[in-house]
Length: 452
Ligand code: UD1
Ligand code: CA
Image (cartoon, rainbow, N blue to C red; front, top):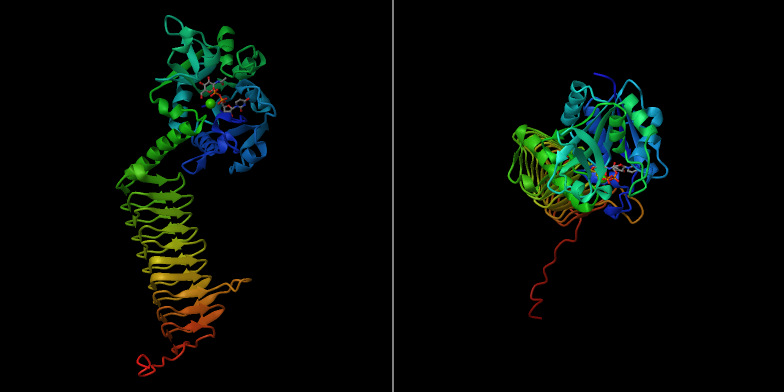
């Protein structure tokens, strides 16, 4: 195969999104539309990628994580053809030049591979992907002669009444032989309804110049849906969501209700894990095997070990080890490491803390900025008092401590291993090992007080 160079057009504003954000930065299943297109180009074997940026150029450039991706600036948006001209230096004579649109995020590497095969097989100068759709409004229409041979693309706004009803449309995915692209661009005009340089006009230009041009008709039109407004964004989400969910189900993950399971593109899930309805898995979340997650749980950049049960709860940027149970209604805030076989029960909040193996935090407890040892029992209503209004302080609790109900641990404070804390204590001083600490008023019973 020839060298594959990819130009991704992402300079448009996307007025119909009605957004402060450049269109291509809107996310589909947690990844920007442009991010999806870049990743797909890579997966299709791109040797080199150049993104044409313009509207919100700085923001769009910053969103690109892959350092090897180049950018070209289109400072005025004069059309898709003009956008490719702005990447003129990137176009190479002998290379296959693939052009993708940043607002068409559902395209797959498999389809790009098919287009390359088609291009080679037909020995084309330009190959595009077309699709037959129910509603061709707004797309470019593919016009063929009476024998079905490709003639040209006509934009909807420029189309005649008979052309407007042609349901074969331009998906916006093109493979050019480098030389043909250069030539086509050099002859492009903007004498059309929008006064723009249309990239698809190069098809007719090269055809008339004697080059071979043809459209490969795609089976499944869904892959090519362009996102121009929030309705189409939601439709793209639904397609991508289904695609991701099918991938995980094929890999041995059970979903009770895939329609209500939201998994972002980068998430990993182990075999025999069960996802109950209302689960949202975001960012770089990794879930082990044999876990049960949900219902109604959200995990962001969180790592769960194996056999973890996590219900009606939220976790952010934390890790939870094997055989631990979380929830219902727990909140694990950033930078927590929860050990093995731990219980984080109902209405428990943990923040920036380590909780050791076998510790039970069964209910109504706040653990913040703390290093908690192993096999500790937290009584109901324990609070680590970590904030004095100015600074945060740490609480350190040794292994095998027993904390009575309604205990305040006023940080900075150390609780020695094996100690007991009496219920209702407000602990302000360090506790040595193996002590019983009592920090509350002794009870007085005044006899006969009621009658008096
Ligand atoms: C385009 C095609 C149409 C095709 C449809 C498929 C043209 C003229 N029309 O129409 O045939 O059916 O896509 O979705 O190409 N862009 C730039 N600079 C510009 C203009 C656009 O970078 O000056 C970028 C946009 O950011 C976007 C992409 O090119 O990512 C497509 O532009 P858009 O205006 O959405 O084209 P459509 O009208 O949808
Ligand atoms: Ca579009």
